[in-house]
Picture 1 (cartoon, rainbow, N blue to C red):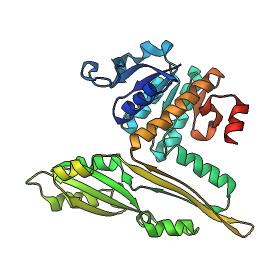
Picture 2: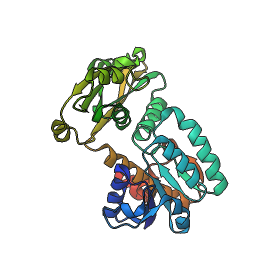
Picture 3: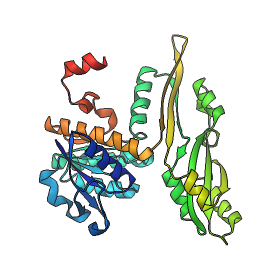
Length: 323
């Protein structure tokens, strides 16, 4: 049994606990929360502790699964925990990945721990596919599309606007951009060409909806670079039609080999983004435990981890089943 600590108990942490409970591979040592542990009840009776106390469990934990919400939470905790734990996380800020990876690698090598960084679906599985596709088709164009699905970060950005009660933002790939990418013509696509941002907003009764919409569509980085549509709806419609957290995406690479057109496409369509991300995280928690036993240390991205480490079976059995 692989002994895991679940650090953070939002949607992702709960999904990881559910997978661990239903699997014969994991024992959950505890849930470690920033909240008052007395106010947090585990779905499966797992003991709940303060994150301040997690180092007390270092000798009885094989892997710490970092399931906190914000990017800063993940990086701060990752570097702290790498001093005493093998870790897996789903850090997902592409622009900051290299810097975080280097910090984790230095810390984990000094402590002799093994830390997996960015074990989600993007970064994560999509990263693996981008690398694999480029290795096979070196002279080609790769494009990544996200959606249709809920962006939790963009939804939260809308909810911070004064007068907003609740909001969901869906990232929607544009059909024309997908067509061009599949034809190998995606290199000329701009940010605005590829995705639409569709927002469903519940506003306070007396709120200035025009001002809320202006603040959304002009928000730097989040919405300003995109075509953005804002729908104002009531709370009842919001709860009935926008309570789920689906997501989807595509990695496309198109090019030629010896004059022959070649297209590679990898896609996901998810009813629940947190549950699927948890499945990836837990699969790589198993791989982490296997490779740590073999003596590996330092930080690893998904590009560094052999698929066989996820399976934990005899090599000949894997070849017989999958090859």
